Length: 91
Image 1 (cartoon, rainbow, N blue to C red):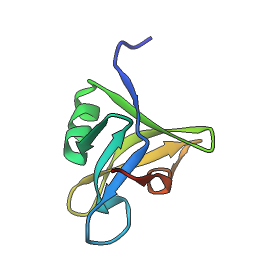
Image 2: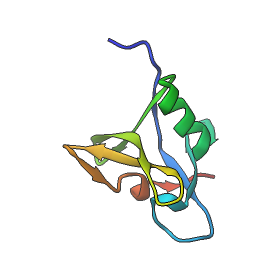
Image 3: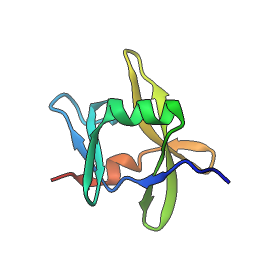
Image 4: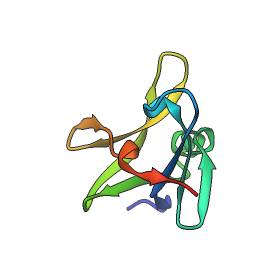
């Protein structure tokens, strides 16, 4: 069993350009909000893991490689999915 903190993401902030995964600028929870770059660094350094719960289903948040830069995307049941985009906007 890992000692790496497992953190639930409950909200996102989208930038002004587009509405897809690569447009997410921040993710957050009840009392926190981080820039996507910080979350990517934490995942890549294995200092934290992140997940979402949508309709009671867990999806792990992983780093995907975009055309110009990495971005966050959820992965569950053996496939990439859109759970991050299903979350509400962070305050």
